Length: 380
Image 1 (tube, one colour):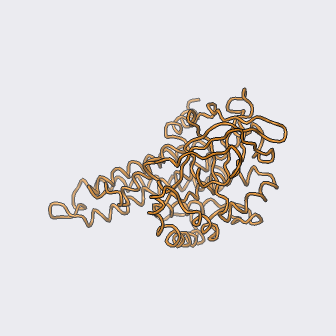
Image 2: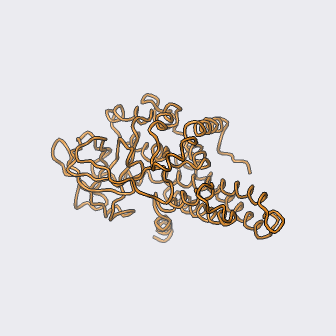
Image 3: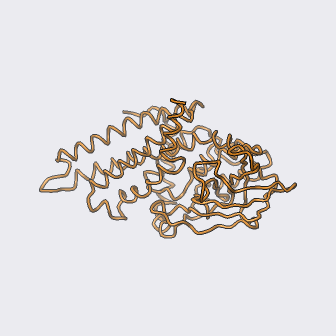
């Protein structure tokens, strides 16, 4: 069925994104995969093309376009290209809202122009070796020293951790406050005591730098507090719906693309003297995946509409996130199986999609956490 949520302007933007990927990303992507990190030149190219800071007001160098559907197009095209290593979605849709919604005027003028032109790459540091989804378990602490915060602690699994120039750190500022004693502090590249550990060796998304970070007596200026002191819990909860929707959008786009290339493959590949597509089992597999994708697409587009109108709640964002990413995982597995031995070869798009997509059910809140959120809303 024809999608109804995108206009001609969104489709024109899609053409721009595809041209950018063809010129600035895909020719270099295999090297980035080997290196374990994308090029800063690509970030600056994305800035020049207007792909960064889409929702940032024009006065700070952004696109002035709060319409989340442009982010949807961006996520879909990067997913179809198999290029998650250049993490513009994280930059735009996860960290961007913190800077535009919580920053002071001085902070906006200091950080947003670079955020939009690609010279300031961002990360958010929440997860710790002993604390993932449980905010109460965060042990990184920041002590009020009058004119600065003294930050100590460590973080892990931080996307953009090596490249990041600005890191939004979730730290404990009131020890007895539990999850409500946390604040957001922005640590800038070069701060004394701020160190990056190894670039973590992942099974997928290898071009996306993911690092361990440590903070040892880092003096963070008071003017780098983002939002309210002890207000991080509320700030994080307010932005999670968009983060999870963005992950879901990538999930359904990946499933649809895998179905597309697998459908083409089984029409061409022969076994026992006839195309695989002539086998009833194969036809049933394709039929099931196509139906699941179509139903999921309808729900996801409805969630996007709700979000654009300002009405998407945490429960439906959680439904979208767990369902779309679990579908992506199932489709990737079934499509790899239909490709046989070729699907297991690392240079094949299906193999890369299989490993790149596996983390989708984990980051942004695991499937189990999503179900817990939904279950609590229904059962108390």
